[in-house]
Image (cartoon, rainbow, N blue to C red; front, side, top):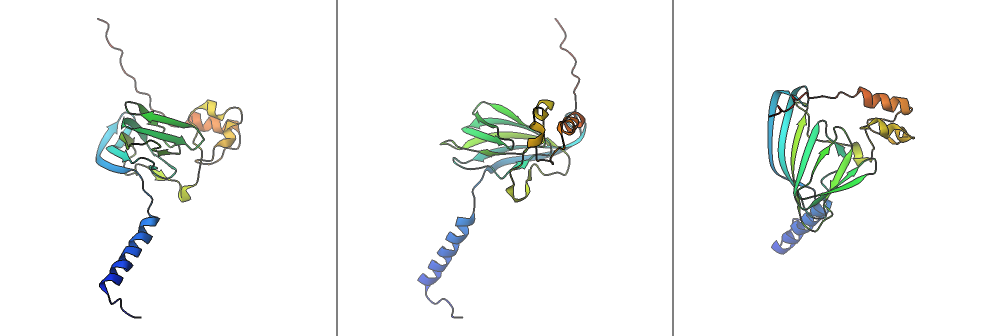
Length: 193
């Protein structure tokens, strides 16, 4: 094997390598700021929780990531631009600056910035301790689920769910929804003055 002799040849070789690597990179959202904290008890989880606050910037025309879900609750506020959330079951919703939305625990989705300017979101994650903020679906497989309400199980809806797995019938889907752990916070009423 002959060594590369000229400076020009070396520069061209390095440039070609950078182009080859650069073409394999897919751009995605950028975490601008992230803060993590742990608590022995958060009422929303009914016990120990990891709480993470972050600012996420998604450049115009980019995807925030692959099909994924969050093991906990996520509350989002869009402060700039517009973000599009594509639910694994087919629904698509756009949120613009000043709008907020919740990402359901465990629901498969992905997000895009289809606008002309960067989108900025403030996210608050409340989830189980020692779990990642999000879990990517293996091989970026498009999955639907899990069901959030009993109504999603009716009229054949049970047959559309593929995450966390398919249901044998409507009754199994309804049972899944009804048996999911839910936290109800009892808040005292405001006193009447």
